[in-house]
Image 1: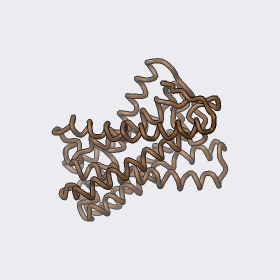
Image 2: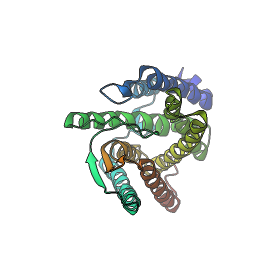
Image 3: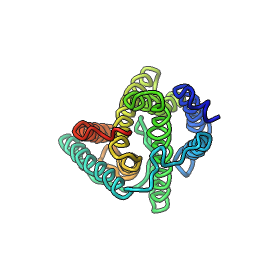
Image 4: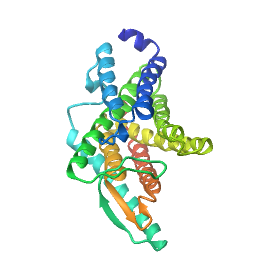
Length: 281
């Protein structure tokens, strides 16, 4: 079975991705665990982690073969946290400047919400929800980085160039995130025109983030830096630390996220070009 997977890596990745996104879509649109007290679609992430390890077993690979290595963990995690922290400080500052220029009073709030393209969120306060948010985001980054930057990237590199693998996993990661605007379309929160616009924008942003995290994998030889930056973006930048004004909560969240991601993408790209990355990855 493992040799069949390696025989046509693109087709194998597309089949695995198809299974993953089917479960993702069913959970988001049918099961809707994000609308329960847990406030998060997590079943597809646990399922994805199981699929990753099943495929690794079929290929006779170890977790370290796709980037879950045992060395330089703290250093890599530290670099990822620093990248997320530095870029989000800038992003929050710009967001506050824009809001205050409009005459808004600005304050911060620490509570959990889910990411929303339409601005409709459910807020949960309390340490229990904060801890759940952290746990679910850890599960999320293990699955998404393990699947896209790890498994898919490693498989495609068996018979394609590193650049092709980098762009291929970014393409799949962009498609993965179209489930969110599709959910909004099904719920009639947006019309078809808005769905197309949001899908294109989300696809491009997620694709850029995937390229950035893929470059971090090439630079470090492991997934931990990308995981830490990914975690910071999701957990802190969108789920926990919120900007409150008279008009509501996180009026400019999408602006904040875009600024942080474009800035970090530019920094990682510049570092990657300077260092030439790791030729083995």
